[in-house]
Amino acid sequence: MAQSFASPASFRSQGRGDLARVGVAVCHGFTGSPVSMRAWSEHLADAGFAVNMPLLAGHGTSWQELSKTPWEHWYRDFEAAYLELAARCDTVFVAGMSMGGALALRVAALHPVAGIAVVNPGLTFDDPRAKYSGLLKHVIKSVPAIGDDIKVPGISEGAYTRTPVAAVHELSQLFTDTISLLPRITAPTVVFRSTVDHVVPDSSLEILQQRIGSTDVQVISLENSYHVATVDNDAPLIFSESADFFRRNLHAI
Image 1 (tube, rainbow, N blue to C red):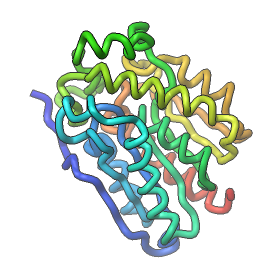
Image 2 (cartoon, one colour):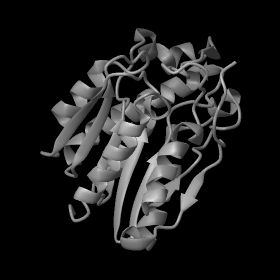
Image 3 (cartoon, rainbow, N blue to C red):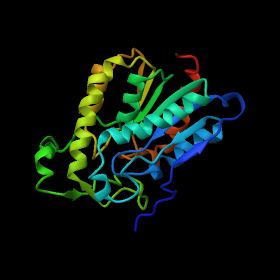
Image 4 (cartoon, rainbow, N blue to C red):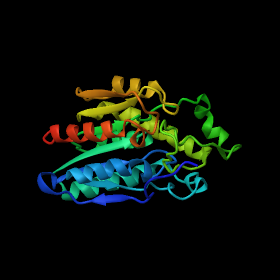
């Protein structure tokens, strides 16, 4: 049986040392929980960054609860985490995985972030049925889970066992909205992209590269991980490279 290795609770830390007033808002993915981002958050906190990782509305409870949650509430929770850091830090970065990547990009389009680090960010769907989710949600309540696309055996991200179709419809609206805002993003961006991802298609990265307003976009390939790369083989690479990226861009704004 797959085992989660951390708590699904939110995570918050004060900065310390030279990075005491440098914050990173971290966001988990769709149907998942902070379990998938806990080790990354703790690594950044150990390095001295102030970190704020919320549990998004509708997550960490039940898929039925998620089915009743509008995407604006997911964004509200992550934006609040960013704003809390902005109130106590001089510099704030955003980071996210999958849907959390989309939310991080949306915050970056609407607020002055110093940089963006995203892992397999979602902006498009691999399943063609997703485009009909607005209709299907009235007929089909849920479909099999999309979670735990992890190459390392025995690890779980703490995702729901079912995916609510109504929430997929909300996710599609978030994606559409975020894509429209990409030209407004000017902050330096690093994208960690798994070469094998069974959840988010390559078209997400292609749209990001085509539409984003930033002229500083770096893509780092993850050769030994699947979608939930933050708990997979390449996690140490993500942790170290993102921390270095944040340090290099302390004065990007």
